[in-house]
Amino acid sequence: GAVVSQHPSWVICKSGTSVKIECRSLDFQATTMFWYRQFPKQSLMLMATSNEGSKATYEQGVEKDKFLINHASLTLSTLTVTSAHPEDSSFYICSARDPQHIEQYFGPGTRLTVT
Amino acid sequence: DAKTTQPTSMDCAEGRAANLPCNHSTISGNEYVYWYRQIHSQGPQYIIHGLKNNETNEMASLIITEDRKSSTLILPHATLRDTAVYYCIVRPDNTNAGKSTFGDGTTLTVKP
Image (cartoon, rainbow over all chains, first blue to last red; front, side):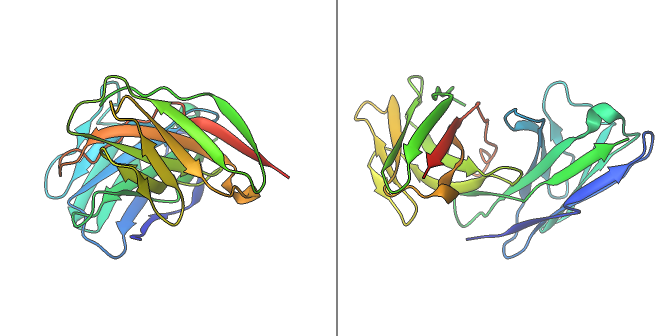
């Protein structure tokens, strides 16, 4: 099946710094990608929908100025956590849908720890 | 997206069939049933999906009731590697409906 990659797989940063997470679709072009966040022992929570060439659509309660999303190409979306705080520590997962199929493919996730 | 209800946890003996139920009583006519699973600290993995008919692939079978208000995912011969959280999701199949709303899922533990 289609593959979605994320980089880095884990990152530790200091409070107040910014962190960028990349999501790539490796063998298909994705006009739409999705970003999720998952806290320990909880389910995935959709943060935003990333649309190639246009602004992202954020879910209610997600600060767009804190979680910057850029979808500059059909195979790459980035999530930047700005001015990170310890409460932003979480597992961030992206997903993409291959237009040729209806399945949604998920990346392996990025573990962010803010100290 | 329609809300789904799944049992919090289930156990299954290795080698036996695992039957995971899901209720989706408010499902709309254009909504598909999808199943994903998430092994600890990994991204979710697609398993199977269906609309009305029962479906089978190399991983599992999906049985959807005639009224479409519930479904069952069947892992025919569960192995220890099938231990994971299983999510049942319903969503329309169109290009703008890729986003999936995850419930709490069922934690399946396969025991030796």
